[in-house]
Image (cartoon, rainbow, N blue to C red; front, top):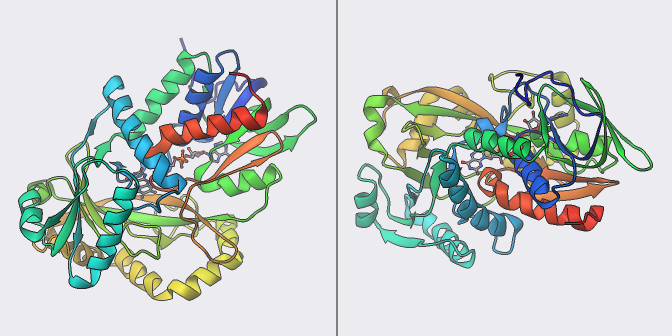
Length: 414
Ligand SMILES: Cc1cc2nc3c(=O)[nH]c(=O)nc-3n(C[C@H](O)[C@H](O)[C@H](O)COP(=O)(O)OP(=O)(O)OC[C@H]3O[C@@H](n4cnc5c(N)ncnc54)[C@H](O)[C@@H]3O)c2cc1C
């Protein structure tokens, strides 16, 4: 019997709730909506032939504890709740995960004020068991790392997010929903009592829809009638991995104190659920929303980025950072040098190339990289417009947040 979510399967012609995007956020939203509204027909439309093809399948795999985020922000609240739920979900479904712990290292005195600020934020956000440690204690936790001082977060961990996405899809199907792959939504028409989603397999008429399209979120929102601000600008993040014989250099996770003016966490070392140690990611503006290969350019993506006024405002402010990111992306030893600030024994021969992911980062017209999660609405639709890291960690909590919005805005009965 064909699997109910095989690519090319017919997409339903009608449903009550359509979710566009089969990454971890879309699938978590579909599962939550199926749970809250068991009588509603739910259908996920995913453009690729596999689930979790984009960000969900190309991340560091970290379950963040909630340290970095501005207290009171959606990221702070949904990450702390979501991390707890993610570990519980992985345990229930027998998905690989581990609360392996993380050290954030200040390498010199100039980074201590920013470390203090992270500690303040982590405590305000209710991160469990967070503690400040001195150099001696840091080297007991990670014997090969070098720090002046550090924050230790034992509740940070790792999880196999693609496996989580597949399990969420199973939940949706078991609740009677459809998960259709190979189904790119190409147009959205607002009708009197429905939305018509035109896609490669025909048209699905949905009473309501939630768009969770990651790097393509802005395009679908605009098709549904939303403002083009913010635009998604893709940031390519390339990783190296430690050669197996050098993996002992890293026990769990070693992170730097990040640059507070950027929404990225800096070059880090992460031991994932397979025992591999990843080093990265870089952060380079890409000219394709699927620039997994360095140098891939797609005309439409490039034009969208280059004609957006925010891009030039951003470049004007961060051109020096851009130059050093370009250097790290192009020259492997530069990336190794950045990681060797945290791990002095690291040598260029210790690493090999791994993979790259593309961050879907919302950029305002004013040149502001939008840090927090952003949700918005149009007629009969909700949109997840900015769900960068830690949205994989927070996905189950994001799903509850979106489902509450859906109940309110769409007037759904529980
Ligand atoms: C390099 C990197 C490292 C990261 N590290 C971490 C981490 O350690 N921890 C963490 O919590 N988060 C991390 N993140 C962030 C995390 O991966 C994302 O926040 C999360 O995966 C977002 O999930 P999503 O479902 O919104 O997006 P995606 O996984 O990108 O899914 C969006 C889906 O929408 C589909 N889609 C798009 N357009 C259409 C269309 N027209 N029709 C139908 N389907 C469509 C796409 O094919 C895709 O499958 C990282 C991200 C990157 C790139």
